[in-house]
Length: 97
Image 1 (tube, rainbow, N blue to C red):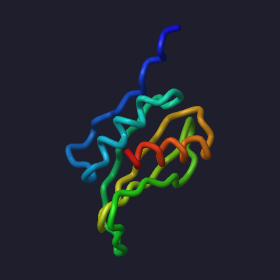
Image 2: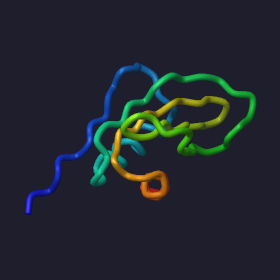
Image 3: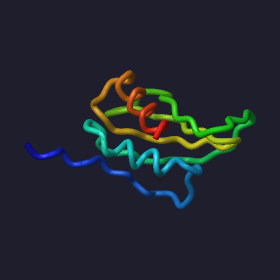
Image 4: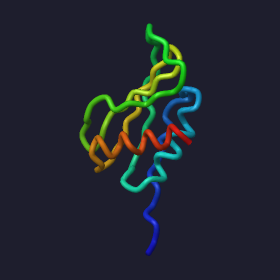
């Protein structure tokens, strides 16, 4: 049986959070992940010592996630038929590697 095609990582910005791209590259190898698009980068007041990615809100066809590292935050749009619990589990696995 043929392995399904991996998802697609969209490169539409020249800057990304440090360490985020390897996590997203691992994420797109999982079944059910169709497209991952890093979005806008911003600054926040709080400080997160290590990279975290959490699901923020559902969007049409998937979810918006928020990646944080230090005082920087970046939106990540994930197109997938998976439910929120399944996607959170995949993100946890990808962040641990």
